[in-house]
Image (cartoon, rainbow, N blue to C red; front, side, top):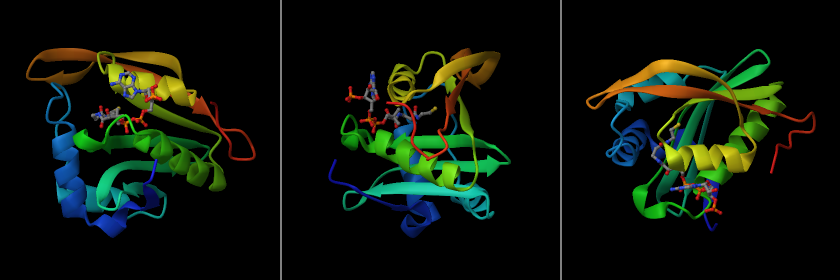
Length: 160
Ligand SMILES: CC(C)(COP(=O)(O)OP(=O)(O)OC[C@H]1O[C@@H](n2cnc3c(N)ncnc32)[C@H](O)[C@@H]1OP(=O)(O)O)[C@@H](O)C(=O)NCCC(=O)NCCS
């Protein structure tokens, strides 16, 4: 992948919100995030906000750490930049930052029907640890969320 990985805040909240809306346009279950919400989520010191620039904004991930656990809040790759390793690079960068802050594991929720995201998380080493019934409620009805976890190794590496 020829993208540069950097701080997502460099892109500006408006650009992040616009990419998020495009990335989730086909998703029946996920609502988009406003620029104001993105500012709020990325402001605290425990926030993790990583973007890929190729050279324009190609994708980003937002997460935060709470004690030994990091949680992925959202992750998106621009539709025209998919299957080029952008999301995998974003997850690796977020995992390294989380590990550097003392996180031992990363958790997230993913829609059961989200084949692309499930394939991505599996390829990075996430494993299923639970299910939340009817977690996503979109225009096309409810969908279960799977709760996935990645255990971080002490040196900051993670599963391949
Ligand atoms: C899920 C998403 C972030 C993946 O982004 P991406 O940059 O295309 O992913 P990558 O290129 O890094 O893919 C890494 C691996 O994930 C898996 N993967 C990615 N897209 C896939 C798909 N459509 N189907 C199956 N597996 C897929 C593959 O194992 C892939 O490796 P490979 O290309 O070598 O086979 C992107 O599809 C997206 O933005 N979707 C809409 C938003 C979303 O659902 N976000 C996640 C919410 S939990």
